[in-house]
Length: 268
Image (cartoon, rainbow, N blue to C red; front, side, top):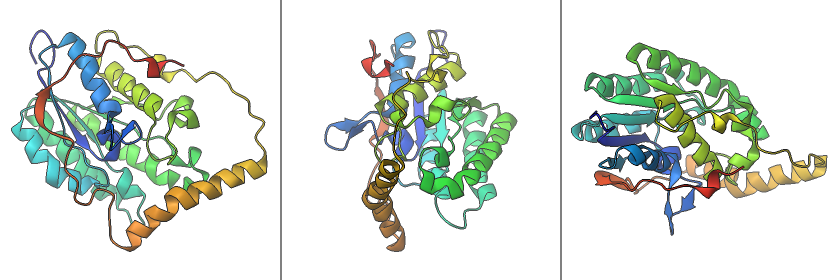
């Protein structure tokens, strides 16, 4: 890293890092990693940024497909976020998943990069139907945190605050953050990295709203969600398909990034 800041930032991961929930495939995806790159660029005008993340990838696939290209770019800043797609599947071996993540931590830090990751919120608090796998998410967090400690990886404790499971931070599919959620994730990673101008405002709860929601309305919302999002997801699993089949990284090469001049979507 130069005295003026980071020179090369590479993001590795799955749909969360690709930016699903923040934009779309027609207008383009933004996401927390793009937002973080823009924040870094405010103090590092020459920053080059690549985003290798591809939706649907499990931790082993992220390691197999993205680690070597990332190392070839010799980043001085990298983010590694993977594992959610693994815990959503039955028979997930958490030690194996964490092993893949740790291998990426080890390789990138050994090359001299500052590496950051983040913790996953309890999905059961966002999607009641996902409560049976909530314990897996928390167990994976613990393993990744231990691996991060071993390799000096910066951890953004995004799961430690109640605001992380506020539905207003999540997109309609409840698996990906919405624009406000991605904004807060970027702010959390920026604070963990100690970037100039970062603070803990991302931890604050959103303004209160009416809570008079009937049981029938809640049940109806769950049924609609299951039909719109859960059903197609299960269908892809049964067919051995992935949402990322045939997809390439949206930003596979290091390119200049413009500094953000402000983001109204972060207002609460």
